[in-house]
Length: 143
Image 1 (cartoon, rainbow, N blue to C red):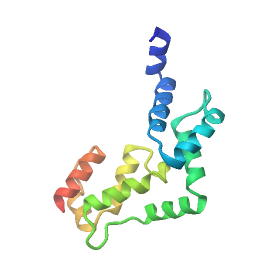
Image 2: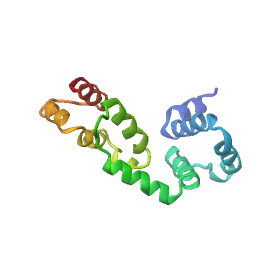
Image 3: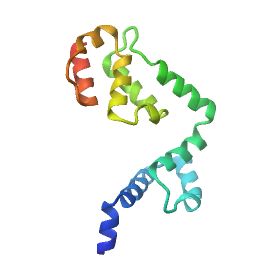
């Protein structure tokens, strides 16, 4: 690997390209076929991981499905016998449809906390929690 390629690898542009390459390597089935027919049209200097995800969602998640998932995310709350682990899993799965609502660490934590059962939120109130993982861990401990 020459010096220029190494610098590219560690620059933002190289890192973004690497993320797309790694992510697309694991595609299978219909998605892999779609990618192999579209990659030459899509890849360019301004092609990013987010652009890839946008194109992928447009193809495989029609707008009506995206809106339904957005709504599910916005209404997601722990309910009934749902555990913190189950809530966190659903939160993670749905959050990919609304990246704008979890774009920062703080926003993600606030959204997650808002959906926790009241008794858990009440126990966590006032505690200094700095990361999503710590929030998840403490919520599970309260449960």
